[in-house]
Image 1 (cartoon, helix red, strand yellow):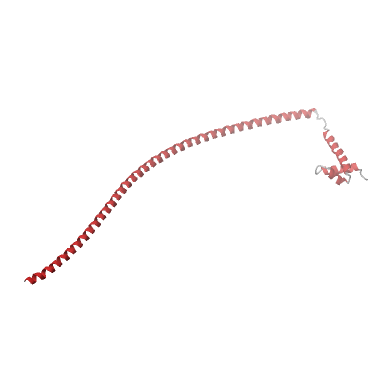
Image 2 (cartoon, helix red, strand yellow):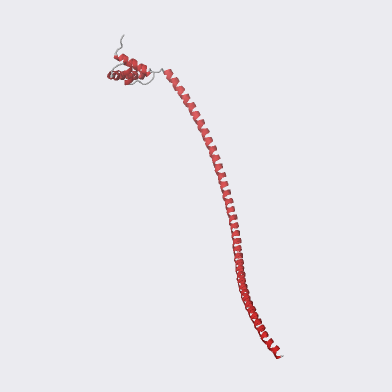
Length: 200
């Protein structure tokens, strides 16, 4: 028996919808129909599915009452669980805040102690720096005195060297004079001695 175009489109749409949403192109290829027929009958098939899904039978009153009681019980249990969870969260938050406040207080105390220690160390460093500066100033004064003494000593050495040089020159001059006088004296003696011999 040959199926009509509509039946083929419906069958293809049912088969494809089991795996994915049918489209005009997939239905047209599966049913072997034209694009216009696939579009027309796929639309009818989809509208029929929606209409069938929208028809819901009225529930019996007993079922509705049971559903209402069940919903109320679920709501009460959910409310109790929510309240319990909220209380637990508040307790945890309060404890965490208490711990944080304690930690902040401890950090503040540590910071104050560190600041005090830093001030004490800074004061100690300032005193040590002042002491070292005083020692440096004293050493600089001593070096200045030693430098002055050294300069005076060098000046004295230069003066003594000059005096020694002058004395050496004077001594050399005196030696030259003495030698000259001795030579003159000897010459005079030589001149006097022959005359004395001749007179005898």
